[in-house]
Length: 130
Image 1 (cartoon, helix red, strand yellow):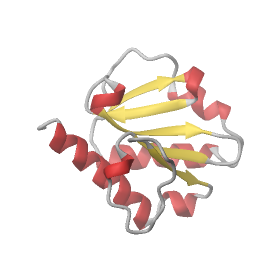
Image 2 (cartoon, one colour):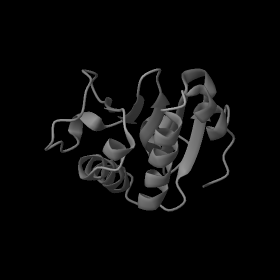
Image 3 (cartoon, rainbow, N blue to C red):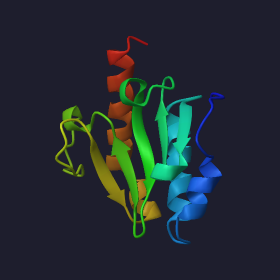
Image 4 (cartoon, one colour):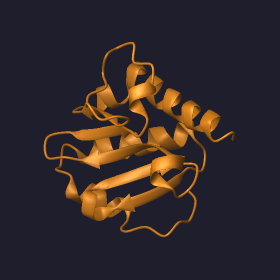
């Protein structure tokens, strides 16, 4: 991952997760890295998120984040409102942001979650002309 100054480490975010959520956090991060070689990762410990993109600017260069919650892990998409969502997984009512609540490793590894992440990466790549 690109070496960027952050406000915490991914390990600190994972440590905030409960025992059953930790493996999900790790799997989602591995999924991001498998789909986008060398992503920019920025951690905001205060917000309990690790964010991923093509550069350090969260709201323009990032496409997704992993957010630790008590009973699930959010896989959030900064431009989720415009992503194709054939399986109807995306939640939220914001102008741009949407998220998927991940409660199991099987769901984290599902075709539908992979499709959303792939679409989010492609959308940012196209938008940024990368």
